[in-house]
Length: 288
Image (cartoon, rainbow, N blue to C red; front, top):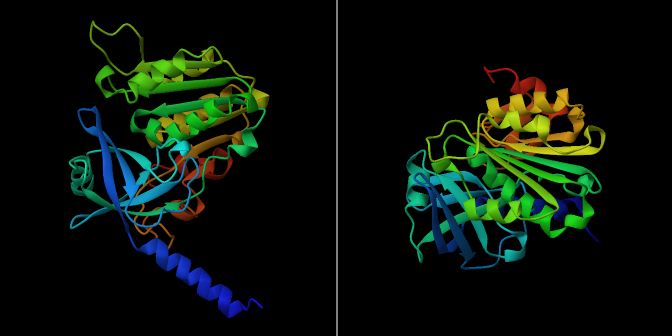
């Protein structure tokens, strides 16, 4: 018979397991932009628990430290995982400098995923800004793999400049589908750029979706997410059907340190995916 003590011990053991980085081997390294690299990892020991699109792993650069990084893999890769990382500090510099054969520690997965099952039958709007396309990549791959489960799918992506665009070849592949719209814009560009120029929210008015049956998934800088949510609200999308990835300042990954607090939420425990209906009032407050 299962007792409370047995259940508590099992829960503690599960938490302890998630506190220890599991060694992974670097199996692939791809430079996406001047400061952004995608790495592929495979476990050296037991395979990690399966993830869902939108969840986060803590990546540990041995001897340097760890950071939360969204899992950007195709779920069909199985135990192997991919992460797209921008160089912004000592740990991310170490992670983007790895070569095939190096080792990286992995803890996770953590967090609330994108509510993909709740989106079945809905028109889908995916809006990414900059590195924010990385937490959306596994979601997009699932949407396209299960394309018949959803209504119209629109993918809108904005980058600072043409040289900062992530996943160029995949964006072209997705654009080539007859059942999906892909629209890309940049904040500024030179004479060689023939695409859209302007912030990503300018693409929303011409996106194809029925507001009453749409569901939106948004990730990028907080100011971009705020304006995107407000643009979607203006088009009639209900706030409870707009989801943001609020990944920010995670440290422990299990909701004990409070480092990622946003208003009443601990992002690693209650998020990173949260609806605008819940998180909107706090994203609007710059001091938070």
